[in-house]
Amino acid sequence: MVDNRKEIERAELHRTIWNIANELRGSVDGWDFKQYVLGMLFYRYISENLAHEINVNEWKAGNKGFDYAAISDTQAERARDDMVDTKGFFVLPSQLFANVLANAPGDENLNETLEAVFRGIEASAQGTDSEDDFRGLFDDIDVNSNKLGGTVEKRNKKLVRLMTSISQMKLGNYEDNTIDAFGDAYEFLMGMYASNAGKSGGEYYTPQEVSELLTRIAVVGKTEVNRVYDPACGSGSLLLKFAKILGRNNVRQGFFGQEINITTYNLCRINMFLHNIGYEKFDIAHGDTLTEPKHWGDEPFEAIVSNPPYSIKWEGDSNPLLINDPRFSPAGVLAPASKADLAFVMHALSWLASDGTAAIVCFPGVMYRGGKEQQIRKYLIDNNFIDCVIQLPGNLFFGTSIATCIMVLKKSKKDNSTLFIDASKECIKVTNNNKLTQANIDTILGAYVSRTDAEHFARRVPNEEIEAQDYNLSVSTYVEQEDTREKVDILQLNAEIERIVAREQVLRLEISKIITEIEA
Image (cartoon, helix red, strand yellow):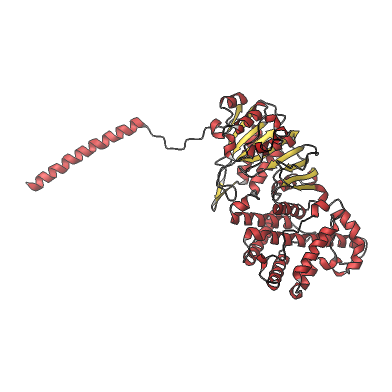
């Protein structure tokens, strides 16, 4: 019954979001507009989250009629230090989403009001442990952008419509909420915008089903982990799968990641908050993971998942320092400057704990190309670091029809072999894309856990055989695809042709007789 209620609530929420996006897009493209929708959703969330926390504390203390939104800013100041300590931020009553919205239609300076609110929220964290998590968080919600309108009046009208629409989202209350409503709204928005934005969207978003497969592979046999990490974390959806699968409290020391795109970095931090991950439980860094890694001093990670950008350029050999970088130097060669894929793999391996698992989505070319990439694959196989290679179906990801692979890394394998799984048929077609169902995920995961051979699907290959194949890691090299073509018996076919020819000759003779009789 609860599950059915969940789905009804989720479907209603998704319909509302779709209508809001359709109404508000206007002059702002969907993928560009997402930061306004998501940012305003975040503003509503932290307003309600903080007000609820203060209200509950007052109600428990016996002040049953207390309403934080109704008191003065001066009265509210006494709660500032405690809230910054526990929540990482503070919002004055006059700056709460609901109160700003109530005055918005008559506020000729709404853009300035919102800008002051956003600056105030960020400033509340300055000089505290949460400062890094809030710094620049609202930078991409540019309330003065021409994208919202050519004049202040037009921009403010658009902002009023945006706030009104966000306020109308049925996100439930904190005592009776059957779905992770704010987080679910975020994931739906990201998926919707990514699917409509082609490649630009796909760069920042991994479909939820692929995220689940990667995460479940990374935690096989574990009910809790110390720390999880994504070196190219995008909007954070992969990291947050650990919270959904294991439970937030079973990721004991938190969620770590790095993202090079500033807008996506901001969205990732917003996503953490919207999924109720406290500021003390995540460390998302901004910068180029390959040349400016931000988690050098941290202990290794028990679980790593990632869908890094495919075949992008990086410094490679042009930076003489990188060949001595302890992440890359063990292979004796750097990934090509035009294809950074295996640089991400080497980085993940370096950050991986001795008892950990890394599951990384890879461009198929890295599995068979020669040159430096072949040398890196040789290093990985000779040192027995590759646990499994999984061929995924094509057309799974937004913006590309390429059939990608998953490379699974381990540092403490029990056998000197590599498992290959051909999951290229494990999907269903949904509109123009393919999708992994729960049954598909379970089938792939079952093959990964059992590590037993299955004709046309899975095979455990001794590393010596991979060496003999020049370290080619393409699944098709080791798992023979089933021949679904109709089998033809040549002898039977020839006999049938002879019968047809003979029958044709008989017919010719009969036709000739008829013609002769007619002419006579």
